[in-house]
Image (cartoon, rainbow, N blue to C red):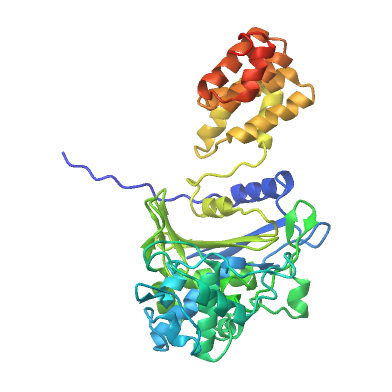
Length: 471
């Protein structure tokens, strides 16, 4: 008897779950001082915010401005797609067709790089130009000139034809933005403003910030409590120079998802079309600018962004007609939270021991860690503790003299990761500290079986006289 199997419809995380994830990421993981998540679907849009624009500052919210980094690339892709529909350029035009005469462009066996390949990350150009040598490493693209960009292009020697292999290139999309500006007789900021931002009512999206936008700009943090410099990239603006707000990006995502009427929709749809697989992983593709992910029953069209002190994400599922925007002022991304806002089947990255786990262990005892962990996974099958996180947590307790607690956590880690030599080496140390030397020897021996080169285990066994010296 034939049967058809259909994947379950994606279930998004609830607003309460999203807020809890945001709180943990800011307060426990110390990823920036605040976070804003915007959600849009056929019923409308809403914003969930937590924390502050800067440490001790005003609350972060829908109109707080962030550097959106590489999300700029899908604005550049939208401009390209729109210019194709206008008849200004063709996707497969060679880049040399629109660069000044005398600018040398790369060819491989006669094949040039095309505009399509710049946008779809198939150009073969390096991520950053070879001649990038910033006067201020904290603002690495601020003094990079058009002459330098042309020189890097002329000196590049491809090892394969463009169009064959996905390879993410900031430089390539920065060059694309420059070319589109030349063709339009303008610059990328003006083009984005005239053709995307103003038609969509996005009045907080710009590169150059006036007094009002500067007041609303969140401080970026490169490390907990340490402010990071803002980035400027006048020559390569198309790769990552835009700043924007959650309100504005919800309009942009809504238009891309067909939830907000826009004459740009045909150009946007064309940019969503897959151009090439990304690597060998099934379900991952690149469009024009946009990345495409088919996983857990979702079809997500997305891009993220990052500069020195900001990490951002936009994405939408055209099948469920749900979209998400995430803005944070941290050097560490939270793509996982954004994806779970669309489909909670996506895993959550755990940076710190969850408070719910700690509270349960304090109440029930650390010897129950395995049972508590399984209960948490039953509530959320994507919940998973990383080996390194658990090991660090156990070592912290060991250093605090909580010998029994740390041993229980080390034992739990060994049960979860039985093929890890490092886990058994750490467990052996805990057995030693707890005075259980026979079990310490057994664990060191297991560490050596898993990795004969485990030097600490070898030295410790010699010290404990479990093996003969020199053996």
